[in-house]
Picture 1 (spheres, helix red, strand yellow):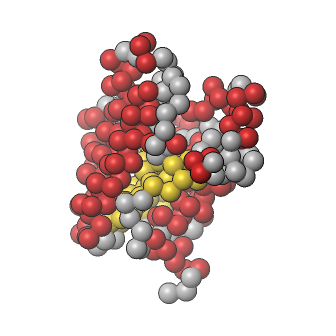
Picture 2: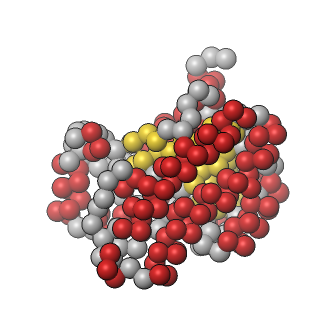
Length: 252
């Protein structure tokens, strides 16, 4: 196989959560441009339909509230009806409830864990058997700088993302010998709906950029190459890893 073909995804089906906007949509678009069919999953049906229309015939919308465990199970069961059983699962959906630790409610904690940690676990658990049967699959989790360090007013988010990095390793340990690799991307600061409170504070946004080694915050296009790599045959011998795409933030 040529090096260029290592990154091609013709004949593959990817299910991408959080695909109505931000990082999820950017990754879905990148996978579609390399030949994959993409199943877009998110709660907001209208935004999801618009995202699918933007990508075109290679995309299908599958609305689901990932915080609702039964709805999540039904989503996993319905996914093969779009383009066939998914070969790739990208867990990009996330929520960050920004409050001081002493003000976090039980509802805040539960909502964060259900979307950020439980959904990646249960979706993978239900989609992995078909990947194992084919002896090829990819799980790509979207971790965070907070997988390894803390930021203020983000306690549950950081806990969930630390757990997601460990879940990635556990998935890799369980399934890599069956051809199903699991890895994670830990993005730095990108302008998305989730980071709007930081983006909308010019001084804070610039301070984040100044802490990178490259000297700027991320643009969604910066994630495309890494996502395609970790979802393609190019990464056949890479598993259990969390790759930081953060402009050197974590190295500074």
